[in-house]
Image 1 (cartoon, helix red, strand yellow):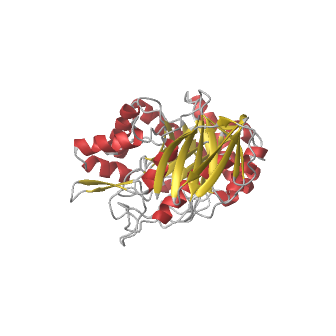
Image 2: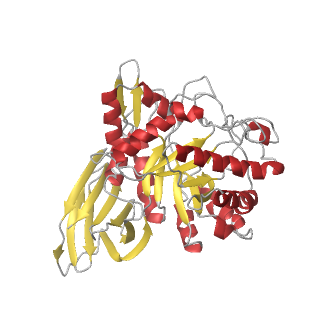
Image 3: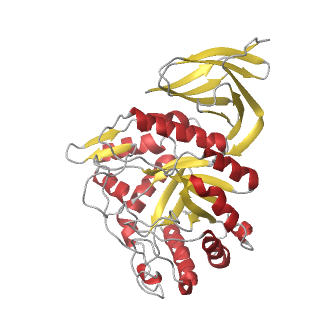
Length: 431
């Protein structure tokens, strides 16, 4: 796969192009970009802690530095997740008198601090629970789903507030929370099921008032945090709860059940005042760190998610070991892919092929940039145009074919003919 950053010069032209035309309409603005990033899981933070100082610097520059991806979005888990070193909760008592984030202080918080220092700007941090503490659930365990007992709704809202305040005491601002990671999932690891109505009732009647009471009015609430195929079903049910549209800021989604990009656009159309963000996605580890198929999936996801209305994308683990771990919930090999892996034995930082695809798109963009309208001759070629604050327009294109792709580009009264090589991801700055 080739990764290209081009400058395309258009000229005043009464063009005669009809075939292979791509029109860009910079005056028709779509959503603002919130940012891009990845998850500060305990697995990622633990692997980061093992690296020598020079590799830590290299990794941070690649992800958060000016010469790298310039990430401005991140995700943390409240309590343990599947990519934690062991199961844990932040409290084990019904009165939350033992609440603490000591486990987070070991690895996660130091990694976030280094990221903030390298970024030199705000990182929009999203916090998501994989499971409430076991004592709050009808199953009495973190794993295998179960439900939050109704009598613990108020206590669980306080649990959220305590988590956010504890992070702020460490100098780290949580900007938003989701009610539940993968709200329909029953997993062998930490999980909990919520109906769309239950999510909305909790967010509206318990979580929003509790956050406000604790001076956390600026913390936003998101729902769903699961796959794209049910975005509209869940949104319609959740927002039918009285007060939910005022309490809930937006929706998170994942990619694990198919493309369903139309659902992002439908959500934007029906709920234009709400935000929608891709909060997690990854591929299974295949032992090949330069897999073109996986790279194409990533490029397609970034480009089409933006085109159809997403405000940002947050990759899963920022860093893993070469086996795609560590993770606590199974012994057999076969974890997840990541943009970077650290080989502790060889003291080597390995860059996956997906990094090139991610970098080609996200390194060019900033929070506040605007997706703008386009039309294209070939709907099977993923592309999106983004207008930056200074008016510059960048066209991102994935050519996943084995053939050179002609692009007859038209913007206003200017036009030009360009060609993109086969198997390429490109950022094409229009000038």
